[in-house]
Image (cartoon, rainbow, N blue to C red; front, side, top):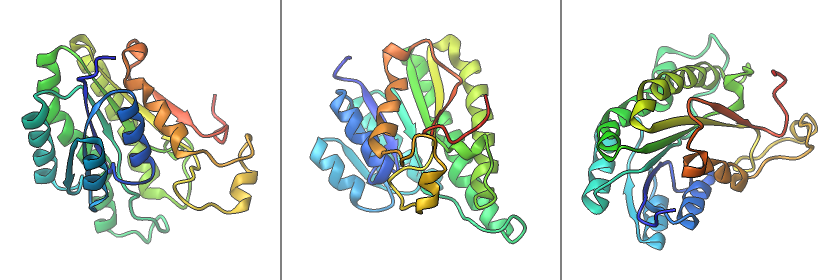
Amino acid sequence: MDAEKVAIVTAGGGGIGRAVSEELYRQGYQLALMSRSDACENLAQEFGGVGLRGSVTEAADLERLVDATLERYGRIDAVVNHTAHPPKGDLLSLDDEAWQSGFDMLILNVVRMTRLITPVMQQQKAGAWVNISTFAAFEPEQALPVSCTLRAGLSVYSKLYADRYAKDNIRMNSVLPGFIDSLPHKNEVTQSIPMGRIGTVDEIAKTTALLSDGAGYITGQSLVVDGGVTRHV
């Protein structure tokens, strides 16, 4: 892989985001990271990259991230859209603010990033995106109504985008993790997984190989990485 390729990772300071950042660095990417804490700044400093504090729900923060990346590197080859978890609660107890904040976090952030970066990728005649989503977008969980509903919509947006910009050699795919060790899980959760264990952040990070040229004929897909939890075929 060209060692000069540049990747942006949002929520890149901890958990899955950190693992993705570390994996991309091992693959030779120059990195631009953003998170709400100083974790991204510390990790970026370790990697010699760009680190900015900010939120994916703020358009100005996304613009700052893209501008800083282009100022530093002059190009953007890959983007991993990763976020924190949206509000949880009973289906009808969640108020309008909870749904709106979830929309800003899970869908509008990706829309805004594509507006900012697609022209750059078109000029480069190449680019790749991975959206970190959830297995529950395909098999909804009552405990996660905002996440399930909106991330299902994210899969639709990803497919529309992938089809629209395939002719420009720009790809977009989604990775849908199951129960991962970035969060604690009860024993009964583990017992419900056919593989009998919780997945690791490193396994999700390595799935971002969908960004690589070796996956160059894969676009518009939602890849479930859940140890067999989902039952659809």
